[in-house]
Length: 318
Image (cartoon, rainbow, N blue to C red):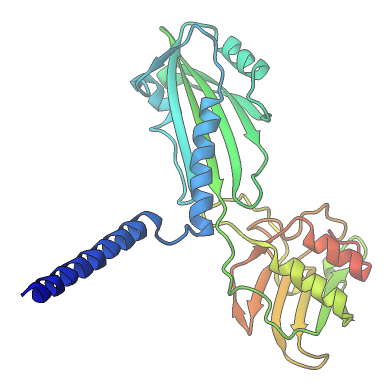
C-alpha cells in the first residue's frame, strides 16, 4: 500500500511539473513571439519620429492649446491631414491673439535641433475672410528607415478674433526591397549599353554603344551596388515633367549574363540625359526599371547609380 501511494505521488509530481513547464513555455511564447520585420521596425520608427518632431516645436508663451480645429479654419485648412498608407502623422492646435507674423518669426528663431527651413508661404480665402501664414521645417532621412520628415506650422487668422495655430508632423517609413528582387547568382559578365545622341537635337541623332564588363571585381561591385538600391516608395506622388520616352529617348541598359553570349539573367534600364545633374533614376518619374529572368520587379531608385556607371564607361551622364 505504501509503495502504491509512493507511485501515485510520483505521477502527480511528474504531471504537475510537465504542466508547469508547458505554462512557462506558453507564457514565454506569448511575450516573445516572432521578431518584428524590417517593415514593422521602420513603421515604429516613423511613428515615434512624428511624435518627437511635434513635441520639439517651441511656441511663444502667450498661446493657448485647444482641443482641435476651430470651425472657422476649415474653409482654408480643410478637415485635417491626409496620409498615404506608409506615412505617420500627428497634429496639435493652439489659439493666440499675437501677430501671426510674430509667431512665424519666433518659430524660425527657435526651430528644433537639426531642423532646416524647407518652405514658407501665405494663403487667403476672401469668401471666408481668412488669411494664413505657413512655415515648414524638415530633417534629413534616418538611414534606410524613415524619410519625408517634416513639421509644418500654419497660422490661420479670421477677420475678427484670435488666430488658430496648427502644427503637423509627418514621417514616412521606407518599404524595404523584397529579398527575392536581387540579381541572381552566376553572373560573370555585364553588357552596358548607352543609347544617346549628340548635338542640339540629340533625340534625332541617336546611336548606341555597348561595353562588356567581365573583370570579376567590377562585376561583383556593380551587382552589389544594384542589389543595395531601394525601391521606388509606394504612395508617393510626383509632378513629373514631360520627357521623351520610347525609341527616341536616351537610355542606359545593363544586362547581367552568365557569359558573354548567354541570355540575360537580369536587366536594368533607365532613361538618361547627357550631363544631367544626378537626376536619372532618382524617383518615380524616372526610375531604374528592373527585370529578373524576364519578369518585371519593383522599380529602383538612386541618385548615384547612373553617375557611377557613367564614370565606368566614360559617359557624361549622371
